[in-house]
View (cartoon, rainbow, N blue to C red):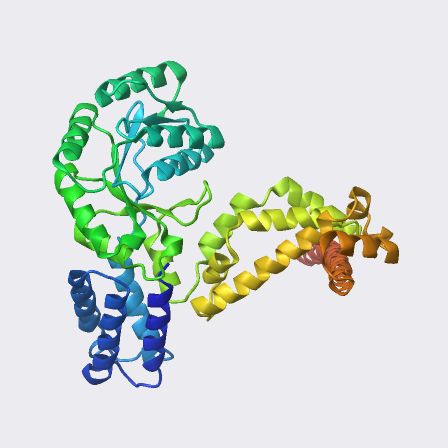
Length: 462
């Protein structure tokens, strides 16, 4: 998300480089372009006016600090304002209540049911025991969808034939107490548009059961309409937070910048992909740095910690040290990289990588295409060949080429690159081992020297 806005803001900021200070004259054009960029990103007009006014007040007349050029100062000012606009700080979910009730709200098509399942996956990872409750009794497909998702993620779904939503929720609460569930996620009914009957039912649920979280699920691609929906729900239900879905599909990002300002309610979670684990906590500061092309190394590291298994990594390291890294190991490594997310998303998180959305998508497309071709090549090998790369010969190559539909030349290129990678890994492992040995000897020598010096000093003081 925000790719279009991000590119334009970075271009505008770059134009201020070379100025001695930020003045009314040299800021006027920059502010005009920032305003245009925000409006093109579908940001609400009220938000644009407030954003521009705040930047103008902070930027005008500021002298450039020593070693800091005006473009760097403008980055700081815009960065701080973006953080303010996006909610200042992270807003974690409230887990009070026994059991803890989370009510999911939203219109049909916003991703409410899928987000409920994704939230269950997230809470399960965090050590909670969630129960999904099917409260949409008007759309039979919604209950079926929730049950299918529940089976897929290994989370139980509570549902009844009854049309009495209050009775369903009360029975679900009793069931959760008997079975040890500590969080109930209520997938409530959505409508094609906000209506009186819909709000009356949601208000009754709120007043009878007092859920600690009332999360409004908003489709980021709805643009200006997202603000109207959010304001209507908030006015009647006093929502506690927002869940923005399909952020990976909207290059403009105006909804995210607008709904927080207009409702004064935080974005708590964001959906960043179709995978069932693609629901993340929202960090305003991290998002602001990404919009300005400064990357998001913290999220990148956190995602790596989630994806990479420590035991598997140690096993891989041992194999690399002995030059036993096989084609099967290579496939395992690629499989873990896929869980990391799309290559496009990863490139966007790397700090200092100045690259347009089109360039990132091009590199991502070519990279993922090449990965698939390599998978086809390896899967065309026999189990023995995958485990023992040294067995490869001309006849085997011809068979693999015919089986995969990929030329022998491309197969040879891959095999050569794979062998170079094995040697490089072995080399890195040897360097690491030698460095460890050297540091150990230096430490031992240092300890002896220290002991010798201490003996000398003691003799001196006698």
